Amino acid sequence: MTQGSSARKGPKPVPAPERWDLRLYIAGESARSRLAIANLKKICETHIHAGYSIEVIDLVKNPALARGDQIVAVPTLVRKLPQPMRKIIGDLSNEDRVLVGLDLRPRK
Image 1 (cartoon, rainbow, N blue to C red):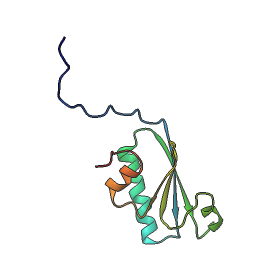
Image 2: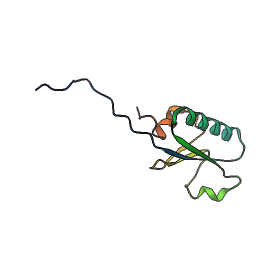
Image 3: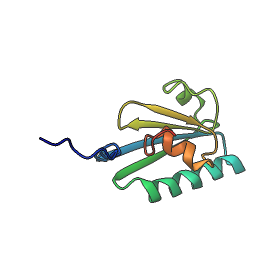
Image 4: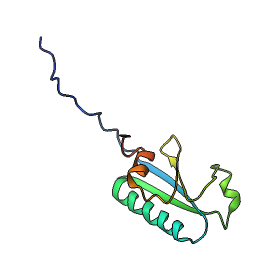
């Protein structure tokens, strides 16, 4: 019997979830809030090839909603689905960091 090829194969791709539920917590109509919204939409359109929903929650209008997901800074992105829940703080301009945080790209 011969051994299989010694070439290393990468990890098998994980099937994409059918549904992504994302919440973006912002504070008003600031430039940082607008940037976070635009960056999130771009990332979703480019990298999430399944159904997704984005709920934008303005904590200036609804501050009590911060308690549910324990939000301590804004903007904060919360991935509700697929489980487990993940949080990413910032304007989402570092695409690689966001992709790693959402489990769309492996850590280096």
